[in-house]
Every structure is written in structure tokens, then in C-alpha cells.
Amino acid sequence: MTQRSKPKTVNMRGAYLNRIAGGRLVGVCEGRDRLEIRYQKDGIEQSLVILAKQYGGSMGYGSAFVFHSIALWGVCEPSARFEKMEAVAQITLHKKESYGFGDYEEIEILFIDAKGEKVTFVVRTETDFEEGARLVIEEGVSALPEVSFGHMSLPAELYDTQVYNKVLAFAMEAHETQKRPDGLPYAYHFVSVANEIIHGLSFSSFGYDEANVAIACAMLHGVLEKTGKRLHEQSIDIPFMQMVVEGVMALTKDRSLPSTTRLNENLQHLKKMPPCIQSVRLADCIVNLSSIPIFWNETKRLRYRDEAVMIHETLKAAHPYLANRLKERIANFRVKGTDRYLLAWLDEEKPAFLVLDKSDETYPATFKALWLLHEALKSVRGKGLFKERAFGNYWYANASTPMPPGGAKSRSLHEILALQGLDTCNEECLKHLEILKKGKSCIKS
Image 1 (cartoon, helix red, strand yellow):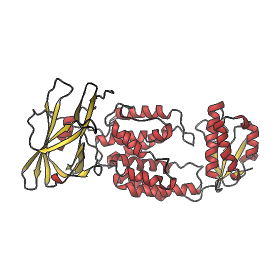
Image 2 (cartoon, rainbow, N blue to C red):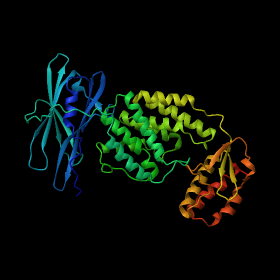
Image 3 (cartoon, rainbow, N blue to C red):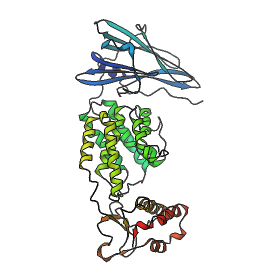
Image 4 (cartoon, helix red, strand yellow):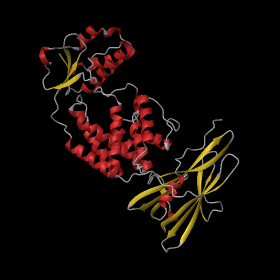
């Protein structure tokens, strides 16, 4: 039987409890294994989330409290039994030392109701072998000794640089030598998305934990879709990694769905996630609109602009500042006026190009097949179809006419097949060649 370790928590348990004391209650959200207390303090709405986490294995089972400040509002249901409460006077942790598998803990929450009277609740964890740990909440006081945390407080920094570095290292290793279609390392993209999140921290109400989860999700949002690697709670040694995993899964589009409904399904799933995770999709869209590939044709640009509008309208409440940045990018985005032709510089001794008509209906599939064929050939024989540049794979350029520059030749698909000797390439290459042959109408010679 697999042994599960006791849940990792940031060594700041008292900081979460000290922070909430004296806060004005906004509401309490209650789920089977979680309790979120939403409160306002110093003019800012914040959350204290109490989770029940189960641990153990062949040596026995136990459960423990995990605290964080990541807003889950909307993930669990508002609780009717706390409706008349107006303030949180204090929250204390109580513990009985155990010489067995783990200590026994309780949380005591002292509320002030609408009449100014004190009402106390006790929260316990309960182990369930079938469904995992759950919270038990009852009126009353704890009989266990109180744990003293002194004046412990959460870090003043906006986010944890150790979390940033650990996640960056994992993402770099996962994506390895992967590149964007413009030839820049894929890391350029996910670091840019993380930078958007960091830039927006000063303009949001995100707390320390939310910032760390958002940054981690931004760094990892392409891992499942683009690398095939799996993520789990033990993948990276950072707090709240399980929430990061759930966030990355929510940010990953389901490719088995029809393309017409894929984005909408993804956004509806994201709406059920904490705002800090939703904000990653806003940041991703901002970055994408800032660096639209030159090989996109007008149809693709229009479709992406419409998708950006849908993303903005669905998720704008998650992070108003990033939503406004996205709205500005959408307003300034140019759909029309792009050059009609794309020139791809072939890897030959004398200058030669493949010329593609971007207005042809077969162009999207043809370009994709060319790109995949180029990459497949590089992996097989160390040399692709197109020339490599010193900085990135800028082997293509837009043009207003189908005439290559400087009197260079334009090749037909038939000439490329003959000159490159592609009749002998492997099965992967042949698959892309078949798509190219179907779309040869967009190749001008």
C-alpha cells in the first residue's frame, strides 16, 4: 500500500489565523472538506481557507488542517448557518500531542453576530477511508490546549522567489528545446505570461498564496498540452502544488472536443476555479495578442480576436486590471491589412523560396504540415526544409507579391520533393507530405 506523507504546509500557520482577527465578515463558504471565511480588513477583501487533508498508508491514517488564503468563492456553497455573523473576533488552533501517527487538532472560531453577541464554533477533521478527510463543524468550544503563535505574520513580499525559481526550472526541463513557430524558445512565452501576472499583482487584491499559485500556473500552463508530461502533487516541492495541478488542468483545452465548442467549455470550467487561476488565461491572451505570428492569415487573426473577446467577457471579473489590459490589446489589434503571401526561405545553396498564398483555403493546413515536416526532418537527419537564422527560426516573411526578393527562385512542391530527396523519409514525414500534396493549390511557383 502506498504511504502518503503528512501534507506539507507553509510554516506560517499562525500567520493566517492572526491576520483574520478583527476582520469584518463578508461571508462563509462551506464544502465537504473545506471552509472559506471571506472577510474585509484594511479595506481589502481577503480569504482564510481551512482544508482537511488526509495522510497515511500501511502504518495508519490521519488527517490535518491546511491553511491558505486562495479565494475559492464560488467553488463551494455559501453557508446558511453563518448568515447572522458580522465579524470574526479571533480564530485559534488547539492541539493534543500524540505519540502515535499524528497529533489531534481542533480550530475554535469566535464570531460576533448582528446583536453583538459572541458565538463560538469548533472545527475538527475526520478521516474517511473511502472519500478522504472531511471537516466537522459544531457550535461549542475546544477542550484542547491552545497553540500560541505569537505575532507571526505573512511575508510582506508580493510572491515567493523560491516558488518562481523551482517552477521555472521544472517548466524549462519539461519544454526542453521546444520553440515557438517564430523560432524563439517556448520559455519566452510562459515567462512572458508569468511576467504579466507579476505586473498585475500591485493592481489586484491577490494575497501571497494566490500570487504564488497564479505564477506557477502561468509557468506551467503549456506543460500538459505541449510536452505530454504529467503533473501531480509531488512534481514540484512548493506549497499548494495540488491546486497548481488542478489549475493547469483547467487551463488546458480538451482537444477531443470540437473546435467550435472547445474554448467555451474551457472557459466554463475555468469559471469554477479561483480568480488567481482564471487570471492566467487573461495574461496568456494579452501575451498572444502582443506577438501574433506573421504567418497567420486574416481568417485566423479574426478568429483569435473573437476568442479574445470571449475570454475577456467571461473572465474579466477575475482580475479587472488584466482585463482592461486585454481590452486595450483587443481594441488595437489589426485584423485586416496583412500581406497576402508568405515567403519561406529554403535551405539551399542559392537563395530559393517557397511562396504560399495566405488567402487560399488550404493555407492553414499547408503551413502547419510544412512546419511539422521541417521539425520532423531536423530530428531525423539534423537538417530541415528551411534555413536556420542566427536568432530564432525566422525562415519566413510576409510579402505583398508572390515574387521572391533579389531574383531568387520560387520552388514548386514537386521541385522540393525532388531536391530534398523526401521520397525516402520516414513515416512521420510522409504523413505531413500527404497533407502538403492536398494543399498544393496555395503554393505558388
